[in-house]
Length: 73
Image 1 (cartoon, helix red, strand yellow):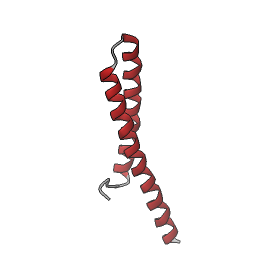
Image 2 (tube, rainbow, N blue to C red):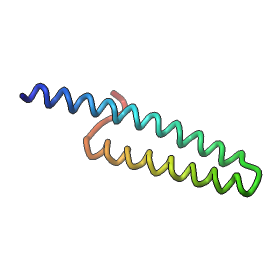
Image 3 (tube, rainbow, N blue to C red):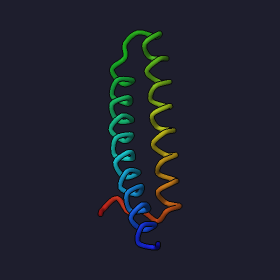
């Protein structure tokens, strides 16, 4: 019974780590796009995308901290 529970926890922890890495990449890409945006309209859209990517990343980061997950596994 406990073996299955640990297996599921480990599986979801790995999934969370993968999502954290993906959202970090998205966030960094959005920051770069925002930095390179030249027109005002594009800048607003880029800023919104960056903020959304940043929010997703930090939400997952907070969840990882609550679960005591280390990214250096």
